[in-house]
Image (cartoon, rainbow, N blue to C red):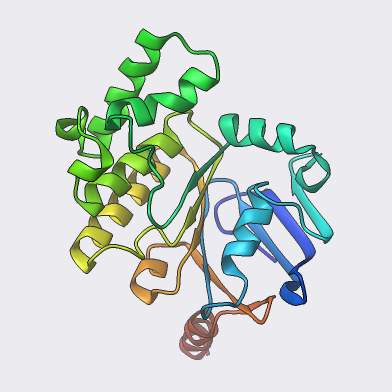
Length: 241
């Protein structure tokens, strides 16, 4: 499997994961290149979120390997995987999962505070990231006082405030209307490009997947070549011929 933006940053090989008798992954393999935006598509229940959770170290696969550089993410303890997500990985979920008791500014500053950054510096850096995502005006609002698009951009700022090597975005536009979804994806792609951050994007939406450099499809727990990618390759081959 080749990547377009650089050498593999994270590699998943032959991942299997079951929940009870339900097999979510059945030998899935995929690479995320340094600085690459990769879309993982597929029908509901195909295992997309489970693949993301395994690669981000949220859960450990039953079998297979997840390598981040020379580190085996799947072999780390739960506390070490948590630490990895505080430093090197950022995660964004469909509904943002902001802490409702905290303001937007404090939500974004939280990862820095947990990493030991002084409160004043953490809030200053958080404020700068809110500005980059166009939601500085919502800094003192709580999640219930913001629109869905605003809250999701705050969640993106929180995921990127530590300047991670990779961001894992699980259906980041799934709860938004088309305009808000477009704004969120434009902000994510622009900021990731600017920072050189790799993005693994899980989505069922073709318009969202179109923002990626590369697309793969998960079907019944196995990564297959995306039909869209295959069609583009066929067109390119016909033009070359």
